[in-house]
Image (tube, rainbow, N blue to C red; front, side, top):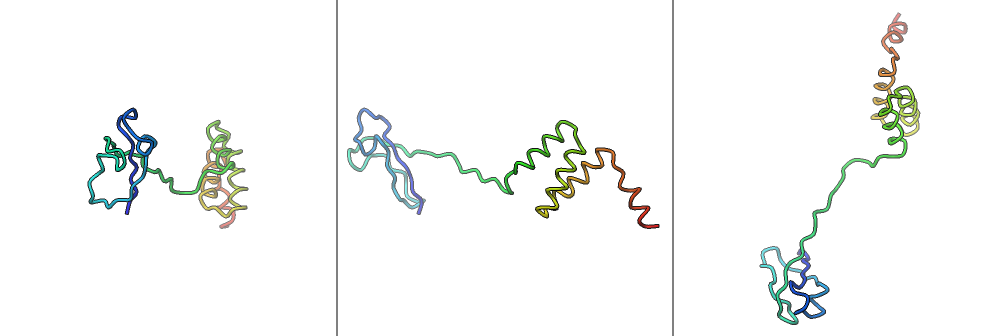
Length: 118
């Protein structure tokens, strides 16, 4: 069952219980309380903002630095850092990002692939 918070509407006419606020465990089907159980003055349910859940892993300091290099157009720096971090952490997303940044920096990987095929 959910817990609901209540607080006095008019703090001048309320008791310490409802002036400071209190919590009540109620069924969701029960109607909201309108009167303080102690002093019988008007109360209202306190609404809280919803909890925000961020999915995925948080940005690491290395991720921030790579992003900074990319913003500044320093593609080879970003690629090198992403490549090193991908080797350490085995993160595939960084490996792909490193390849994209190397290409933006002007590296042509196609010519290396053709030499290996010969």
